[in-house]
Length: 258
Ligand code: NAP
Image 1: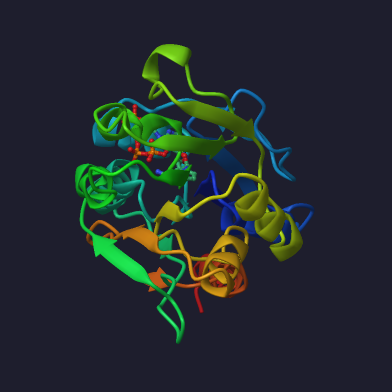
Image 2: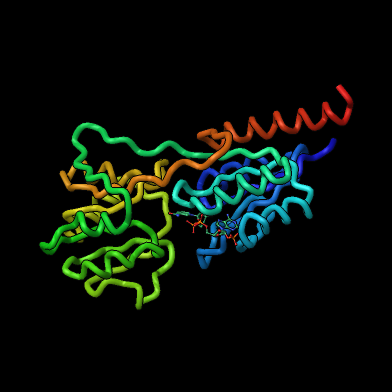
């Protein structure tokens, strides 16, 4: 059996799910790559490499040196730089490339969403009057909220942000999803939240806060996604696994000359 040498760009639930499907399957020899942004990354079912590649050229070099035959970009919809690099590197070497791109959340009856294009616009949308804000945008994107110090913020992130990056009136909760509805209701109520700020990440791991906000009639400042990445896209880890099986089948057929 010729295993398909596969690189999965991770950092998402879909990437971990795909890693579990591929692990132990003799058709694949796969590695998952993490950026190294969280202090204690989730355990993965595959061998892990950690850290940036050094741009598109660095990633292309990694693909070449490791003779990668399939590149799966299962990074987060807001991770636009690595996705652009993956497309460019795969195109440069002719390596088959697939994006796992989860669908965005869509508004349903009862939602009070304020759609904004950027983090700066999200901070502006909070207005001048003091509000109690549940801020779930990740610890790299706090600067615009430091410039809106009139609000009380409850910030939830996997790792605590450095203190110097925080707005003055803040409570930090460190937690990793998935989050359930009961906990999200409890959080909104306990902290008397009157507005939620989130990226439109999509997926089920972080969607319970939207259900809770809808039920409590709390407005949601929804940061829209960057433009979708280039290349072939599928929405789930299961579909990506089928794509890999097909790539493996093609590899075996080519080796047999059929
Ligand atoms: P980004 O802005 O697109 O990428 C910044 C740089 O980080 C890339 O140029 C690359 O460095 C490195 N990098 C990113 N993902 C990598 C990976 N899987 N393996 C190796 N290097 C990687 O990405 P980001 O928004 O900072 O996100 C970083 C990671 O966190 C991603 O893996 C993403 O899936 C995950 N994540 C992001 C968010 C979010 O809201 N942005 C949310 C949840 C999870 P080089 O150029 O040196 O290769």
